[in-house]
Image (tube, rainbow, N blue to C red; front, side, top):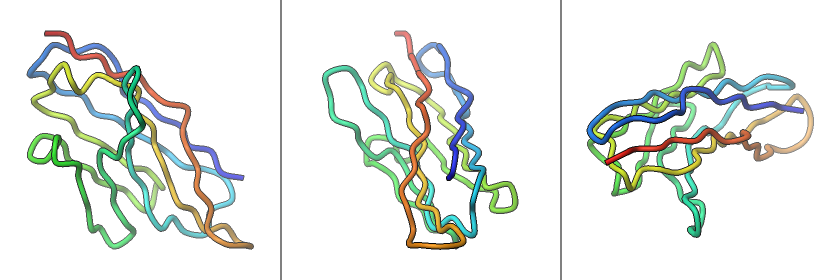
Length: 120
Protein backbone atom coordinates (compact mmCIF):
# COMPACT_ATOMS: atom_id res chain seq x y z
CA UNK A 1 0.00 0.00 0.00
CA UNK A 2 1.07 3.55 -0.75
CA UNK A 3 0.13 6.76 1.00
CA UNK A 4 0.30 10.27 -0.44
CA UNK A 5 0.41 13.11 2.08
CA UNK A 6 -0.09 16.65 0.82
CA UNK A 7 0.72 19.93 2.49
CA UNK A 8 0.99 23.60 1.67
CA UNK A 9 -2.53 24.69 0.81
CA UNK A 10 -4.16 27.74 2.30
CA UNK A 11 -5.60 31.19 1.70
CA UNK A 12 -3.71 33.73 -0.37
CA UNK A 13 -4.51 37.00 -2.10
CA UNK A 14 -4.61 37.24 -5.87
CA UNK A 15 -1.12 37.63 -7.25
CA UNK A 16 0.40 35.71 -4.38
CA UNK A 17 2.20 32.39 -4.27
CA UNK A 18 1.84 29.01 -2.62
CA UNK A 19 3.91 25.85 -2.72
CA UNK A 20 2.27 22.45 -2.44
CA UNK A 21 4.16 19.33 -1.44
CA UNK A 22 3.20 15.69 -1.70
CA UNK A 23 5.24 12.90 -0.16
CA UNK A 24 4.69 9.27 -1.10
CA UNK A 25 5.45 6.46 1.30
CA UNK A 26 4.84 2.74 1.59
CA UNK A 27 5.55 -0.15 -0.73
CA UNK A 28 7.34 1.76 -3.48
CA UNK A 29 9.74 0.25 -5.99
CA UNK A 30 9.50 3.20 -8.36
CA UNK A 31 7.17 6.09 -9.10
CA UNK A 32 6.48 6.36 -12.79
CA UNK A 33 4.52 9.58 -12.71
CA UNK A 34 3.40 12.18 -10.20
CA UNK A 35 1.03 15.02 -10.73
CA UNK A 36 -1.44 17.50 -9.36
CA UNK A 37 -5.12 17.72 -10.16
CA UNK A 38 -7.70 20.16 -8.89
CA UNK A 39 -11.43 20.24 -8.45
CA UNK A 40 -13.49 23.35 -7.90
CA UNK A 41 -17.09 23.20 -6.64
CA UNK A 42 -19.44 22.05 -9.37
CA UNK A 43 -16.61 21.24 -11.75
CA UNK A 44 -14.83 18.08 -12.82
CA UNK A 45 -11.39 17.22 -11.55
CA UNK A 46 -8.79 18.46 -13.98
CA UNK A 47 -5.08 17.94 -14.52
CA UNK A 48 -2.94 20.86 -13.40
CA UNK A 49 0.55 19.50 -13.97
CA UNK A 50 2.37 16.21 -14.26
CA UNK A 51 5.95 14.97 -14.20
CA UNK A 52 7.42 11.61 -15.11
CA UNK A 53 10.45 9.92 -13.63
CA UNK A 54 12.92 11.40 -16.12
CA UNK A 55 11.64 14.90 -15.49
CA UNK A 56 9.42 15.57 -18.47
CA UNK A 57 6.54 17.83 -17.47
CA UNK A 58 3.17 18.85 -18.80
CA UNK A 59 0.80 21.61 -17.72
CA UNK A 60 -2.76 22.71 -18.21
CA UNK A 61 -2.87 25.72 -20.51
CA UNK A 62 -4.46 27.78 -17.75
CA UNK A 63 -1.40 27.49 -15.50
CA UNK A 64 1.48 27.55 -17.99
CA UNK A 65 4.01 30.21 -17.09
CA UNK A 66 2.64 30.53 -13.54
CA UNK A 67 2.97 27.07 -12.00
CA UNK A 68 6.03 24.84 -11.86
CA UNK A 69 6.03 21.17 -10.98
CA UNK A 70 9.16 19.45 -9.72
CA UNK A 71 10.05 16.24 -7.93
CA UNK A 72 12.69 14.87 -5.62
CA UNK A 73 13.05 11.22 -6.59
CA UNK A 74 15.17 10.42 -3.54
CA UNK A 75 12.37 11.65 -1.27
CA UNK A 76 9.47 10.39 -3.42
CA UNK A 77 8.11 13.91 -3.22
CA UNK A 78 6.49 16.19 -5.79
CA UNK A 79 6.11 19.93 -5.49
CA UNK A 80 3.88 22.49 -7.15
CA UNK A 81 5.08 26.07 -7.03
CA UNK A 82 2.13 28.32 -7.79
CA UNK A 83 2.82 31.96 -8.60
CA UNK A 84 0.60 34.81 -9.78
CA UNK A 85 -2.40 33.05 -8.33
CA UNK A 86 -5.85 33.99 -9.53
CA UNK A 87 -9.26 33.52 -7.89
CA UNK A 88 -10.07 30.92 -10.54
CA UNK A 89 -7.21 28.79 -9.21
CA UNK A 90 -9.23 28.21 -6.05
CA UNK A 91 -9.96 24.50 -5.69
CA UNK A 92 -9.09 21.38 -3.79
CA UNK A 93 -5.75 20.21 -5.12
CA UNK A 94 -5.07 16.48 -5.23
CA UNK A 95 -1.76 14.73 -5.55
CA UNK A 96 -1.67 11.73 -7.86
CA UNK A 97 0.98 9.09 -8.39
CA UNK A 98 1.44 6.01 -10.54
CA UNK A 99 3.47 3.65 -8.40
CA UNK A 100 5.19 0.40 -9.18
CA UNK A 101 5.35 -1.68 -6.04
CA UNK A 102 7.61 -4.71 -5.60
CA UNK A 103 4.92 -7.00 -6.98
CA UNK A 104 2.08 -6.54 -9.43
CA UNK A 105 1.42 -3.87 -12.01
CA UNK A 106 1.61 -0.08 -11.51
CA UNK A 107 -1.27 1.37 -9.51
CA UNK A 108 -2.86 4.80 -9.23
CA UNK A 109 -2.92 6.53 -5.86
CA UNK A 110 -4.49 9.80 -4.69
CA UNK A 111 -3.86 12.11 -1.81
CA UNK A 112 -6.60 13.40 0.46
CA UNK A 113 -6.61 16.85 -1.11
CA UNK A 114 -5.57 20.26 0.10
CA UNK A 115 -7.65 23.42 -0.21
CA UNK A 116 -6.28 26.41 -2.09
CA UNK A 117 -8.30 29.59 -1.86
CA UNK A 118 -7.32 32.74 -3.73
CA UNK A 119 -9.10 35.92 -2.70
CA UNK A 120 -9.63 38.80 -5.07
